Image (cartoon, rainbow, N blue to C red; front, side, top):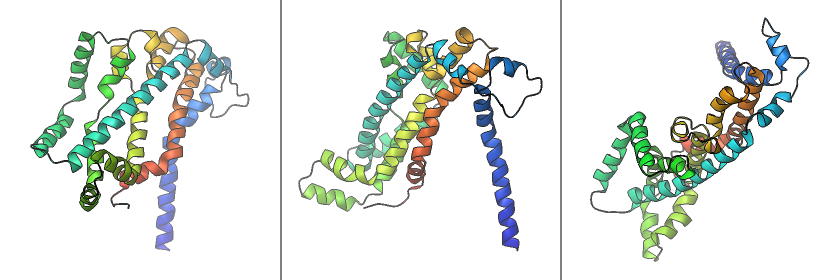
Length: 276
């Protein structure tokens, strides 16, 4: 009886917490399908609508170049993630398997970079990119985001879980370091690689501060920066339903990505053993 009562209380709390977390998303979608007139005519907000409309979604793509923002964000996300994965994989392999003088000291100094506030890094990157005349370019957007100390550390720890005997046996057979990395270490560490990729995609898609600083040309706006441009030059601040429609469109790719790969994300984060 005590166990049943405890389980009931736990599920009730989980349901309550789920409602609290999901309600903003429900309200966002609900507002996006309300007409401009019906939304402004509600003196008391209604939690449902009997006459949904998709006119706001049409407005979201016609009042501002939202499709172009999507394309820019797609290019930025794909290129940045691809370059970062190459840098992270090679760096993690070097720290995990290669022996060179000063490796431990270098890695400790490398980890100390995590202690530097992001604001200082942004200022340094801004000055560097400006001096290189890379403002309002995709290269200027991408370069400061092609590495991550945390992801290198995470993958290094994952690589070190692979028995070193496999590496020594491969070297005896004449296998090169690159072939061992691609044929042995990467397949074993696939869950962690998928997790890092997804987290980086989400990070790039939600990037706001750096693109806002480095671009003032509409041709290089990302979807996150496009929201501000929409408020200022698109719908205006009074057309809330159209704004919500734009936010829904921007949020859908990340929601779908998480729902499709949620098990891989959990597996990569929680992975503690070696798969062979």
